[in-house]
Image 1 (tube, helix red, strand yellow):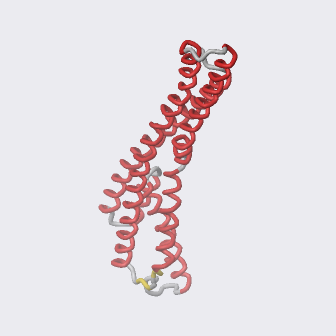
Image 2 (tube, one colour; image 1 turned 45 degrees about the vertical axis):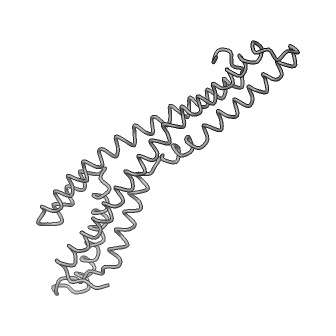
Image 3 (cartoon, rainbow, N blue to C red; image 1 turned 90 degrees about the vertical axis):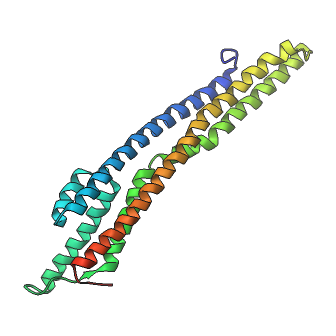
Length: 221
C-alpha cells in the first residue's frame, strides 16, 4: 500500500517518520534523565540528612548535578552564605548573622522553577507530535480519497477494483499518524507525572531546608 501511494502521501509519511523518530529519541532521553535524577536525589537527601555541616552537603550536591533537589540546595546555600557574609561585614566580631527568610525562600523558589524547566525541556515536542500527527495523517487520507475520486472520473467506473487501491493507500497516512501520536501521548502523560513527582519532592525539600535554617540560625522575615 505504501508503494502504491502518491507523491503527497510519500512526503507526509516522511514527515511522520521524522516526528516518530525524534519523539522516540526524546522519550528515551527523558526516561534516562529522570531515572538518573531520581537516584541522585535519593543519594543527595541521604547525605544531606546525615551531614553535620552544610559544606558536606554542598560537596555532595556539586557531584550530583543531575538532581533537581541538589540544584535547589546549591541555590539556597549560596543565598545563605551571601547573607552570612553580609552580616559579618556589618558586624565584624559580633553575634551570629540574622538570616532573612524571604530572600532565602525566593532563592529556593527560583531554583525550583529553573529545575522544573530543565526537566520539562523538549517535552513540548512530544505534545506537538501527539496533537499534530493525527491531522497530518488525516490530511494524507483526504488527499488520497480525492485521488480515488479522480480515478473514478478518469475510468468512468466506481468498480471496487478501481476505488479500493487508492483508498487503501490513502489510509496508510492515517495509520502512520496514529502510530507516531499514540506513543507520544502515552509518554507525555507518564513523563508529566514524573515531573509532578519531582516538583512535589522539591517543595518538600524547600520546607525541610527552611525548617533546618530556623532551628540553627536566628531568623526574621
